[in-house]
Length: 389
Length: 133
Image 1: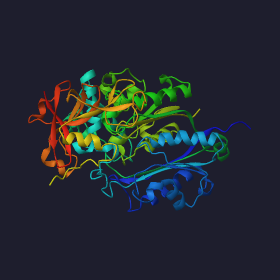
Image 2: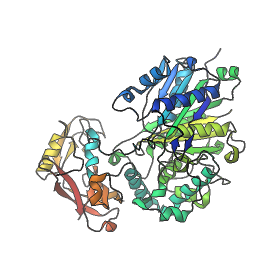
Image 3: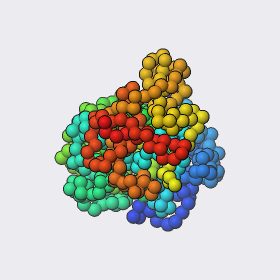
Image 4: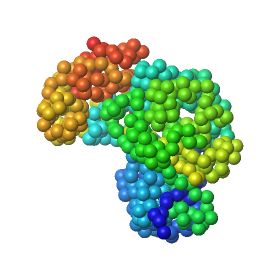
């Protein structure tokens, strides 16, 4: 028998209503229920989980500081491979990569990746009031609005260097909303025009309110195992063809170039090289959309268009349903849900697209998907290239 | 009483904050590669040398990027909004986050020349801010 090949075999996300979980619950409960559903999707019992990967902002200070330890105790499992890598919202793309390496090295057989956040229900998003220690002593005292300020600085610089406009950014919000309209699970599904985005209040120039993601709850889980195991279970496997990750900074003044997403350039290059495919082979793309500018910078960094041409690339609703470049097909962080760390939902949507489960928003004959998470303040990037073949 | 967040000074940053109290902006300079950096570190982030020394900055630079915070970073900044948060390229080559102190926030542009303005917000802490030069 050869080396095992890692695949994704189960996914689940918690249903939301108006951006909140359906009944009051704890963040551990939320993750356990998502894990149960993803394992049911995979046809694998919880007792077989021997790898656990998670990242979150819950229970800190306290049990969330040792998140995998707390979660495995709560779930009643004893994992022999764990990974609590937390690089922000892109952590889950890195987790898929790390779980693939662990499965292929024989360090675990069934890996469970979880995420949970109740930031909307608990009204806990506000990050202000934390002491300005270590690197933050050089930025927090000046009143940078977080998280929008860093993205605004990047957008302002991109506009200055390349002539990108607020209309370009609004194109992304509008196209993403059109996808959300096709997704019954999305939080914001009503019609949205470019004018609506431009007329929404400016929050941190040049970014408007409708350039920003939602603030919602969210719970999700992903189950990975070997291709042989998936085959024995009779489940449709999604292969992990390529991955890459990198990060560059957290304080925004340390970002190498505000108009260039260096972390995504490094991560994407690794993922494409590993997959051995070109951009033309990608059928569906799921990119972290904390803000509209995040998407534009990521498109350029991953090489879907040249540097500075992101505005033209998204103009004319090219990324909307029916357009030539299907992007953020669940409605994204902008209109589907954004619970603080959104990256796991990019993966869940990509898997559903590749399994042909997306109903009205299904991309016909989707075989290969690219997922890219961004975390921190344009700080970290992690890319996964997934395929049914 | 000053209600905005204050830096938590540590042994590494103490000389930096102490100099600001005396209206001096200082940077770490690398004797090996000759470059300056900000914020101050134990190893040069460019060449990783530990041959570092403090040096006085001229206090001049240009705006690399900026945003106008229409919504404040918490209640303590509410009275200031709208205010300008900017990233400055100091003439020594180091980059720092700061505020542009200006009445007409709409007049700020990338590339404008700026000069340091020392804002003594408490007896112990002076924040380096900038004004258009």
